[in-house]
Length: 178
Length: 164
Image 1 (cartoon, each protein chain N blue to C red):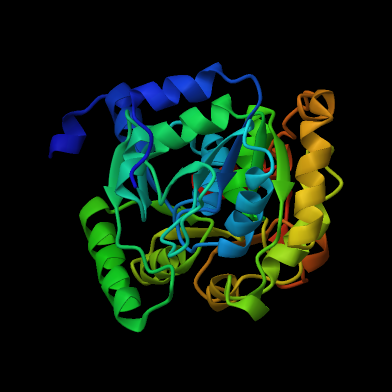
Image 2: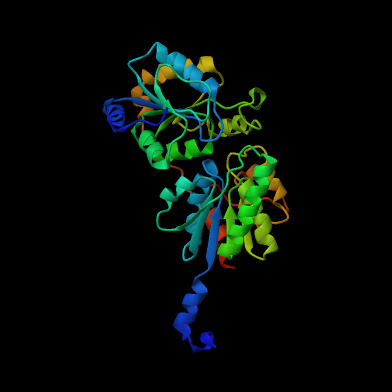
């Protein structure tokens, strides 16, 4: 199944609270997608669109695609109120830049979802951001989605993007120009 | 002969056309790379990543796409290395900067052999230890950086701050 057509995009736009699920472009993350699918089964009125990677699993309760070009990805990211994802830096930076609330489930090396457990470490360091909700398993994920869709003001709260470190830029600039 | 005919102003323009290659895999590495591009004000910028559609993000800059080797398949890695080497030969940058991963390692490795300046900024995702590529690049990165203060060591990697 491909990405959404124009009409479907427009429908996605009209809903007031949308969820975008994204697992990055490289590896599938079926554990996450299956859990959201399960939640969606009992909450069919909720608009969800998912980018699920090259996966054998097809969600039954919402539209999805394997991957999409950046422009389309940005479109869904912008329109969504809540982003459900793995602990990927791309997603985290995009969410901080775009003022989005993130619900993150770390990939685990033990389940073959990633090469090593760096997502667990990253998660620990980013869990103090107010726009990031971190969960440890599928059960917690289901409860967290329930909580977040029922506390929309929390999800829509604005945060500011932490700036790039000046000393880092200076160090690079100085070396590059030396 | 040509240079001797240029006046001072033109000479400085020639000088200022230093070239930087910003190279990384797609996704989070690329996002972080974009956040340090302001350090290269006044440079001619070339971008390279492992997803050809990312050219959309830098419509006004030179862009090169490279083969992906995200699953670390040996043959893909070799093919990627060959492509990175060819890219360096074609673009001849003065400075090569990367946030990872394998594509960044190859870029730093070859660039060092070709006497280019090399900068490795390890991804902020590596909060507990340097990435595999980040460790391997030690001898080839002139400026070898981590984004976590607790990972800094006396002989590198060094810490000057993070992209967020």
